[in-house]
Image 1: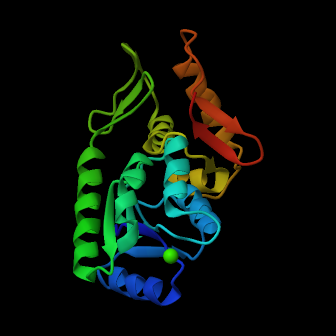
Image 2: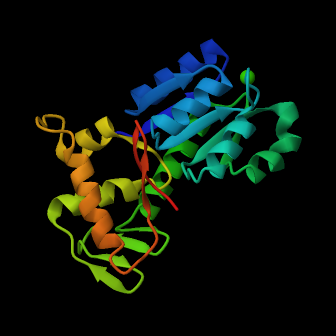
Image 3: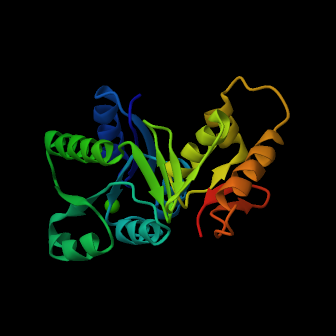
Length: 224
Ligand code: CA
């Protein structure tokens, strides 16, 4: 499946140009032209890579990056900086950006950085998902809480795998239904509550702290 990239750039023509190039490389692109929209999309649309312009109306790219990292979102971030901001690049890296590209840049350079960062995440995005003392192996389908092995049914496993794929990211009930049960699922959406209850019983059997949290009126998130 093609990677989903979020581009936050207020220069509309430049944004359009980058969008066309990335699209022709086969990526799926979302665009925001201001900081707040960018932050919201970065949090809610689960992009696999984010390209942030530094200077944006509303909120700088660096601030967006800082806020994403503060909530545990680890998506790779490439900052676009104007030449005279290069001196500040340390601030960008401190805020948790993975890379920066100086404007004006060649599109080939940007594409190369995008490929490199996506490759790296795919390598890290390996077979074992982990959060806190919870780990899940996609190949062996084993789940552990610390040293304790946990037996899950196929659906419980799928649900946990989905929540573990992005810890601290809130998933809506619709997202969970579509991704775990499938787009064509027809039935009672209370099925999610039922399975979350099963999972919690198994994950907290020895009095372990709760990791699957309910976000009332929205959905679920894996966090402390
Ligand atoms: Ca700008």
